[in-house]
Image (cartoon, rainbow, N blue to C red):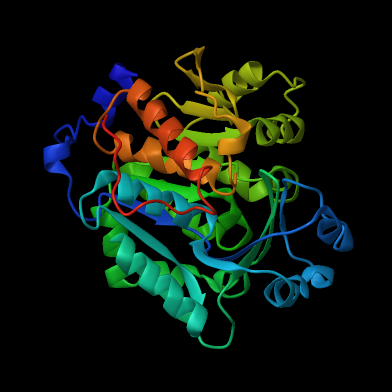
Length: 359
């Protein structure tokens, strides 16, 4: 990893805590307002939902949001996979506006809530506003320690390349050295992903994505395949890795083998790719430079786990917070494990005012 980091920073001074600056990290994705509630299992059955899965809402799922608000005690939390990771990274960095985020919202009370949350988190947001479409929402259905996500991305689906190309927004791209995008954004604006990916490759910057959900490998394989050559870092969990293996015909369900095969896929730049596969309480797998390494996860007692919603997003946020400082892969993973561990002891992807992590 040290060789990779040295190559990464060959065109600008090595990042340290003393050189953190505004706009260093840029996320782009679907900003959603999470509507979270603890629900019984029969509520999932009512909507034909499989526990602990993330899906895009179909017509039959649309009443779920009103049902949640009318039947249960709900929490409203700034969400969306990429925005979650960016918020966590910013919180752990403890330096104002290192992280920025781009996406599309409506012009309504929910978008105002998202803006207020971003301001409080010291994240610089450049939201495109669609006045005709409501801000995207995500039903977070908590059953025990598991969560099921039903996203109605609404306005988030309206994002387009023209907004990205506006001078002020493209400056955010130019100012950043690190980029992170969840594959959920493949459903919205593949051209925007490609623009940022190509800019990163041409300017020796770090471009990272997340597989995000198994269905994306199957139903959005073409735009995913177009982005893969630009992946310097790719994140995923074990079920996403298996879905990726099936979609790309790797012929294996072994997570380590999958990680190695992902690492070996064609790449635009010579920088070695890093594949990061989390497995809940099982060891995190890192594949890079032809080998895999396991990182043990410190387990929590079952009674300490409140809500696994956002654990994967938090892991990425923690990982990125050390990556932008030029830390070793060991520190990146340690920070990811720490942040994920903290998040699952909270309700939703929320965290205390102060970050007590020390790298």
